[in-house]
Structure formats: C-alpha cells, structure tokens
Image (cartoon, rainbow, N blue to C red; front, top):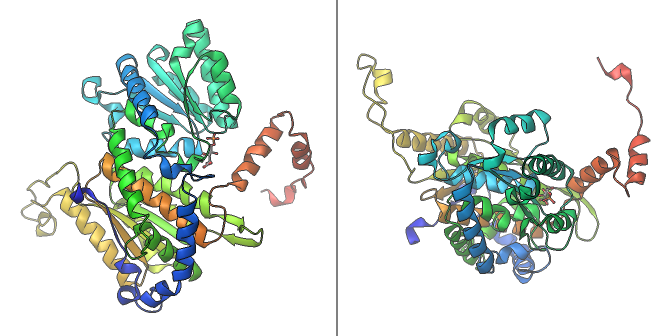
Length: 468
Ligand code: PA5
C-alpha cells in the first residue's frame, strides 16, 4: 500500500518559495520546537482519554464493525432509501465520505447500477426540505438512521419525532424496523427512547465528539450501507495515525502542518481555505470547515484567559472557484493560507474530443484529457498563488479510495488537535454551539430553560428606525 499514501507538500509555505516577507523560514519553525514538543506531548499522552477517544477508533471497534457490516448487509437487501437524520458532526462526515467514495450521481443511477439504497442526509429543519424528502422516499422501503451524540439536539429530535410518528401511523409496531439510533450509550434522551421503542442502536463512545466521530458508527454505518469498505477506511486512518505519532516534527505530517498554520496565524493569516481539485472531495471541505472552525475558534485558553483565537475556514472547489474566489486569493489581503487537495489518478479518464480544426485557439485542447486539464489547472493555481506570495500547500491523494480517505480524515483530525494544543485551548468543547442550542430550547419552552428564556425575552427590542 506504499503507493497509496497521501503526501503533504508544504514547499509553498516556505520563504524560499513565497518570499521572506510572507513565507515561513526553517528557523521560524525550529523556534517553535518547544511548543511543538509540548503539543505533541499533550496530544499523544491524552490518546484514548477524555475527549480524545477518537484516536483509538481505528483499533478498538472490531465487534462494532462486524455488527455494522451485518446490519448494513440486511439494510441493502431490504431497503431502497437510507436517510440520515442529524446535524453538524452527526451529518457532515457521512455526507463527505458518501460524496468521496460513491458514484457522483449515486441517487440518479438505476437500482441495478447503484447496488445500494439511495442516500439522503437531512441536516436542516427547513420545512420545505422535510416535505420534499417525503415526496421522494417510499416509507415502506426506507431505513432512517437518527444520529445524535447528545440525544437532545432540537433539529435532530424534531426530525425524529416527525418520522417516528409517520412510521407508527403506517406500520404500527413494525415502525421500529425502519429506524436505527446512533447515540451515546448512557447519556441523553434518544437512548432512553430507543430502548423504550426497541430500536436497533449503535453507540458513539463517550470520548468521541461530534466533529471527531466520522470513524465511529456515526460514519461507519452509512458508509457500510453504501457498500464502502469501512475496514479499509479504518486501515487508512490507522496508517496516518502511526505517522502522526512520530516524535520528529519533520517526519510527522500533522505536526508539521499544525505548526505551519500556527505560525501563519501569528502572522495574521486568519483564514484557512480548503480547495480540493475533485468533485468527489467537495464535501471534505465542508467537513473540514466544521472541524477547524468549531475546534479552534475559542474565546478562552485552558487557564480561562481571554484569547479569541481561531482561523476562519473557507471552502472552495477547484477548478470551479478559479473563476470566482481565486482572484481574491491571489490579489486580495495577505490573510489566508490555501490548502489545495489534488488527486494523482482520477477514477475515470475522459478525453477531449477532436474538433474545431479551423480554430487553433480551441483545437489545442483536443486529444488532452479532462484529467490533464484538471491537473494543469491545479498547477496553474499553485503557480499563481506562489508567484503572488500567498502561503499554500498541497495534499496529494494517489487516488480517492477508502484507504486514502481514512488517511485524510485522520490527518485533519490530528492536525486540528495539534494546533489546538499549540493554542493552549480546549479543542474539543463548543460553548458557542451549546449557547445556540440552549437558546433554542428556551425559545421553544423546554423545561429547565426558563432563566434562559427570560434572558432572551429581556434583550433590548429592535428599533424600527434601523429597518428599511
Ligand atoms: O461537533 C460537535 O460536537 C457538534 O457540531 C455536534 O456534532 C452537533 O451540534 C450535533 O450534536 P449532536 O450529535 O449531539 O446532535
């Protein structure tokens, strides 16, 4: 599998390539040696503990994985639709892995070619969306997977209530055969409801937070239903984990990537752009944005001092955004680090047909492949960014497959953990998100949230003079 290892190329982060003014020197990196050692220590000594249970997911789920594979097999036989109800970390991972590893038009393929149920992830509570979902799925052929770690998120629980009601009305006591709950084993309401209703359940381990949960049953069950080789996904993650355990920062891709972002942040680069050059990786950028934004955007450090740190993640898609965002990236403020994700070998090859011989300015394209065009465009963006002294790096995937996606997921999670440790913050909490959740509970009259409701009701009323 040596030729299936992803590579992190950070040449264009370095002053030798982007110039001394913006670039990072070898000396600047080595000056951070103590910080890197401390971050390494903090992360590696907490493996499997507290909220770092996710580091062990590639190694400790044998029984769960076998159960998932068996369950997925029977779902594939019986159902034509598989619908995830979840939000945030309970939705973005399944969506990203689906997009990466399934046919790009999966749901539109005929059943014989799809060989897995149609797949939907409902990560919003827009009423039009819920109604339109119900217009396209046939309940008798649908398996729902409600995913919520806390077992209480308003959005997910509302969806669950709507679906459970419909299922009960249609199937009575058989409703339970159409819904699987993925949640905490001993916290929250969903597990209690699931037990009372007799639902099949999978557990999200205590030490695995939403945005770090893709390699737990949160991501593994949907992936297995879609026919993805989840063992390979975990093997890829294990390989990357081993690399990210190396003490020498020059050989540890996540630690090196982390220190580069840390230095860049100190230089005022407050935006991190994730730009894959593959439609299959488009939603990886969405998943990354949550991981990076929610983990690193924090008001206080571990000692409670106000620090207001973080780097705003932005998603882009190559080549689409070359004709939109890249203008800003190459000529706008020097406030960004751009990560390109490239693919050595796309899974398909498409040749540009011969034609337009009388127009040499068009004909030059003929005979090339879209693969060559894609790669040339990525090189062109890399060149333009570097020429304009914009910090950028490239993550290369030999191919998009379960093994390389497992590596990529683990790479980003480890990088995030290392940066969080360098920033001396709690990478794994999300007080800002909780605040919003609590305000929603209060607004909708949940018991125990009366004080919050009072707080919301006593906020200064808006003035009509500022509404036109
Ligand atoms: O990363 C996180 O912890 C959050 O984004 C959660 O995933 C999100 O709020 C959904 O929470 P839950 O899975 O508890 O419904």
